[in-house]
Image (cartoon, rainbow, N blue to C red):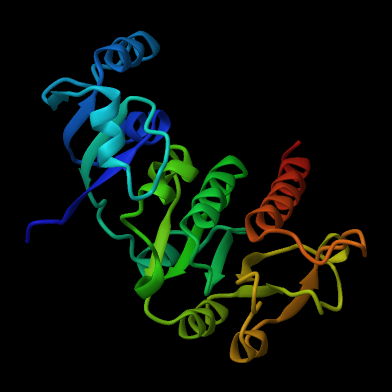
Length: 252
């Protein structure tokens, strides 16, 4: 079956898509100047070999991004989706591994926030991100732009139901750690061990009741009392960095 195609924009998003042998890039729309920069910065990669190129002016590229109003940096590509990753297959493949960390998003819909979370997940070695298939903006230019190329480097698991997925993962020896402003203790005081799912809800509503019930631990991030809350992508970054730090400490 033929996969649907869509446009992404931005230097990092397009460059990393071109580098990914599993990603099919159908066309690249670019300026003469952006081609020179792309070739100069990637001398060891024939990134544009066998790719259909369409030379455009910056104004013409602007029109392709007019709806999202994002900076294309002289590069836009038409790409196909990667093969969807199956969560159960992934779990079976890491059955004997310890200290696997997955993150899960519930009702987080802003593509800029999701993209930033994906970028942070790649930066701090999170093993995968679980999202609800129906609301995941998988063809958003904003998502790819915010992810800054990291859509090519993170395991994304699209599922039909978050709570059903959490219940399944608990049978596979994962702890579900929900982050909520009413959490019982700061996440740095938690005894991080074993396999964990870091569960984040939307900024406006937090985690739903049934999701809270499926959490083994409810944790919070201590912040200045004068500040109501952190942006969801900032919260994830704080937690991801800390978890990665603990893992690196154990290795060293």
